[in-house]
Length: 312
Image (tube, rainbow, N blue to C red; front, side):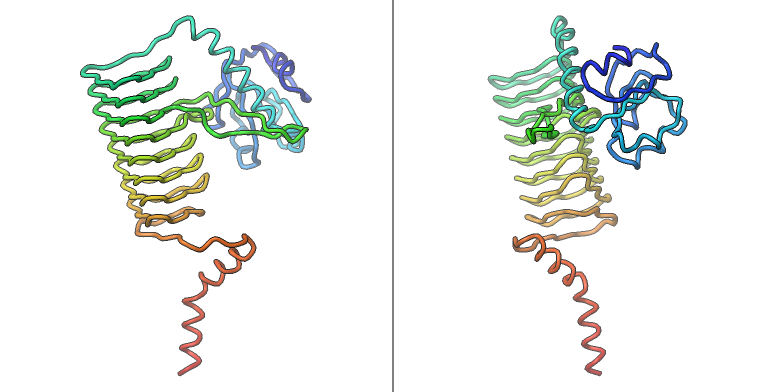
């Protein structure tokens, strides 16, 4: 589509510098090009476009004065809602074209159980073994020597939503995929969501136990082991050789270093920047109380040190 045609789908104030640009994709800021539509939700990405050219920037009206004058810009009241509506449009346009040419590629020594489903635009490497009732959704690439046990779903749509003016949820269509490396073992009833724009990545040598959920845009580092009932929220980056115990919950946008061990049932709500063993377990309580307790727990060593000093 052309730049001005976007306003037929999402309303806003548009500033056109190059009306001849053809827009072919919605992209993250990191992977954008001159044919990309890029949504800016946060000021931290503004510096990326000081010199970079993209097809169209869509951003909040409150950021009007922050942009340089060499890009096409569409200012909107609610960027998340606009993203949801435009992603839905791109998905439908893509499907109407792609369904005419259904295809997937399978390597040698492929083994599949009963009721396996493989969608469009899927590539499977050599020595891939799928259990019963496995679903491989579109835009998934799986490497060599990969085993996926029964009931697992790879490439399902992630849990991304925006709120409209009537306080109703509008689903964000996920246009990315899933990339699984070589020598990966995935247990039963595991769900790995595809990325919103970029890919969810499971690196070489990762092993995943049963009943694990990995959300959109998560990156799992090489040779990481994940035990049962772990939930990893969107856009987390897990380092290499991590060992994540059962029932661990990791909140969104968390980064962990290499060689990290996380004890079972821990909650990880901040980045882990150094290797080592970590535990994050506290009884549930009202959030305001929890914050006060957590603050004093972090000071206990200093409190004890002070008390011992006073006793001398």
